[in-house]
Image (cartoon, rainbow, N blue to C red):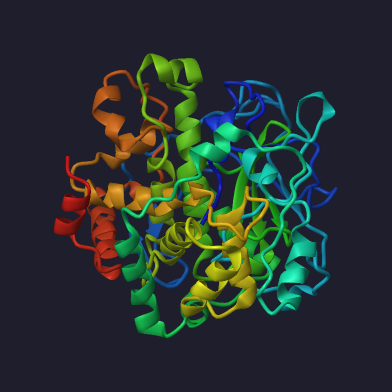
Length: 466
């Protein structure tokens, strides 16, 4: 889930910043002042393609593909492989926080694996002003006070949100309109989960597996980094201060992945790594080698926006090897935003009761859909999160004709630009995620996602004609 790995700042960013879209956090709180062990830098990736952790004893052995990246010589100290500016080596760090921000012990923190990420405010922008990335700026500063009022009112009070600084009108206008294009598909996906498991909470408990210890999390991360050939390149932080399962950012010039300890479930952790590292990070690295790695370059080559392809592809990779690869989160976000566009906060909260039992989870989805609003008694939404299901369905519609190796190798581009760009791309140093190596197996897994979520090719073709 990332959940917001493509968020952008509305303050000025350097055009060559890693990934052209990862949020930056300057001077932010780290999990610990002590850095841990390096994640095995310079080791070659494993030759095996493992299924998701739901089947830990099973592994499909594959021959080494020619597109696997050969081990490279060790770079000089203080050289950052993803960015031209010097920085220290990528290491791990751990959160020392024992309770979450509401003071609850770790053992009582609800799982965040199904929730969208709503970052905490406080990032510092240019001139020392707090002008953080867009998604941070959209988080109300009085969210805890309004949450308490809402629950004390027995869900009858429409929150009145306040923000640290005025939000750009251009951004609010861009995301003020919700789409209903895929609402039937979203509801069908949600109902497919409920028909099989009764409630989402039951689905999560049955399929997500147990929460992992720190040691087990580090073990899975190390093995995954080895398989992708990127050990030592990414700082990994374990924290208890996220509402999402994970978030990827650039911190102090280094690609940094923060993972929520309370959302790290045995069977879903590797899916999160495929989303954040296998998709966002690797496509960002490949993008850095392309002639369109800047805004000027993108304009020169006439590129379409990277989204919805970027988040759609990452979302598919999150569920790729799940026993039951339901697209619940993307579907519920799409539905929630559509409903928010013509409902008040309270109406939306009660409407979601048919799908989500936990009031705390419903609150988070409603805040996500209503962010940017001050008076939530009025209909309105922030529609950005509809991009996940939108991207998923567009990719699945064209999955038979998309060259997915090129889609990864060309960087942060739309699948619609592949044919146009392939003759200009710098592919010599391109990395292909390990789970995409076997083209036939990858295609079969996408077909399985279509079947599991009650989607039909004929229907997708009608919705998205060429």
